[in-house]
Image (cartoon, rainbow, N blue to C red; front, side, top):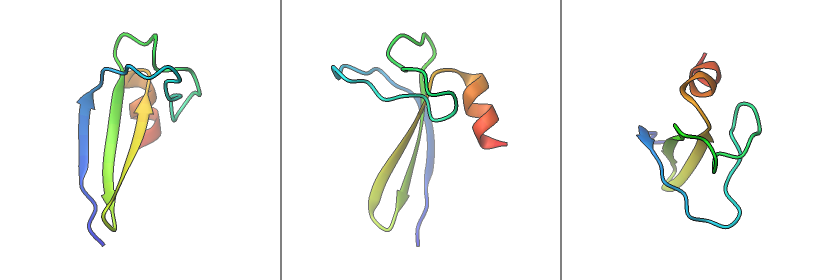
Length: 60
C-alpha cells in the first residue's frame, strides 16, 4: 500500500462544499481552508479542514 500526504490551501467552488473533518463546519466560509490528501491503493482521499487549529487537532 502506498500512502502520500499533501497539505495545501484549497479554493472550493462547489455548490455543496465539504465539511471540516474535525469540527463539522462548512469549509466554504473559512478564510484558511486546508486539505490533506492521501493516496491509498490508487484512490485519492481528501480530508478538509476549516483552520490550522482543526487540522492540528486532527493530526494529534
